[in-house]
Image 1: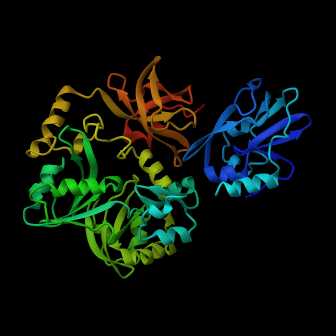
Image 2 (image 1 turned 60 degrees about the vertical axis):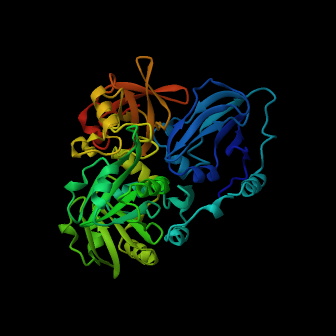
Image 3 (image 1 turned 180 degrees about the vertical axis):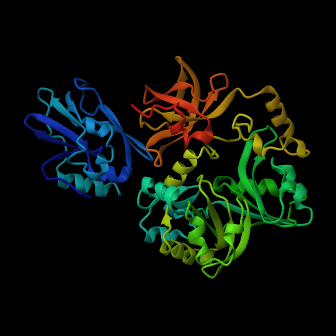
Length: 129
Length: 372
């Protein structure tokens, strides 16, 4: 399982990374590995308002569909249009080219409630995977 | 997983673990859902050759002088059309006209049949068959003593022929041959459920690992249940529990080609005849999605704002790079080329109805845009 030190992790297997005031969100390497070949990614429209832990989309693999949850509250500032046609990026580069949305965080929103990479690693191992 | 200990294992279980397959519980067994990846495995079957452990399926041998009539009375196809070395797709009907199972009946010799049945229905099928007077005492459940490996794909015949004593080119589709494969005694059935040429190979349980390894060494790609489900959906083949069940009729499932109403009496005959007379209220159709959202079992199908049907199976077609599936659709709406919508996570997604048999090839017929 590949992890990145520079980001935070949710219990629902999203990663979040604060960059120039905007939170970039994607799914973890562990999540893509569990899903298998991803064939469809459903994302919100730019401007959509998200509560923390709200469903913002879905990622569909050959075997299952899995909801995507917003790690922070805010407004969708950008969505990764490349995933409409190149869904395999989610399997190939989950922390890079397969970012999913960018959230302009709501006032007072932070990443503090999310796990560090070492906490997430322990969480995944405890979950019995 | 906590219930893994209660699951039984096929003779190839150790091979799956050695290949680091992802295992899932299926019909009471611990089965491989994928090895390298569903898409890669499905493509291997369409372009070369893949192998599947299908040992979980029930293998029931029925031998005796008067068993033909007994089998005839509990299946829909006409067993009298079989000759030694030939097989047929058939249904085990219920008195209600519903479907208890879909099966393949192989005639090994005069008065000697092999029935291959769905894993989840095996125990019930055995009880039912033994309840028929002329079959009682004639049935042997060979499921656990043997293994079954499906070898499927355009290269299947060539891969198998390398170390096989039987002349496989001479075995027709739905034909059966016996011989030796890699030195092991096997039964080779030219059947399968992927839409490709190939054989289903039955061997003794203790020979299974050797046959499996030799096939891989000869270039066959191990494939799991995920690829198998994708391939059979692309081919428009029904799966018990999805397209067919106790409450579906062969009339609406489009399976009347496997029902011979004029062969004489059999369980469910009058109910099926009446259903055909009335005509189906719904029909099983193929569904091709305009985008890549997968239609999954239970999703509703709508047409001009009305709910007109329900999805039975869906898959990502590795062969075509599109999402497709099957659905029961109200008979007056069920026409090839009809634009409908599948409701996925609350949102309508554009789709087109096609004949099931066209799911693999409808790209060229002009009814599908293929664009989002």
